[in-house]
Length: 86
Image (cartoon, rainbow, N blue to C red; front, top):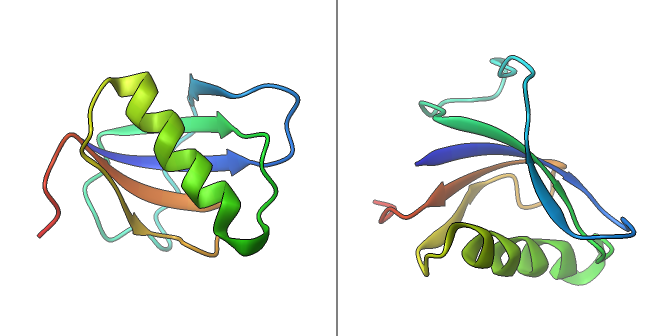
């Protein structure tokens, strides 16, 4: 599954919530299967939010195959969940 994720940092609790907004098409070059809001406690400094995002998604989706495909320095990220990235 390829997911488009909007990350909210410095949140009071960690959670993954389905997002009902249309996919922003101006930067997405992948077929998107799902869209989520993800709330993280970590700050975006020193890659801490990306590390926490991957750990939270692995736990939430019960898989070891979570890869950040695009958006390492953006609030919007494209993530591969349960698939091998080629």
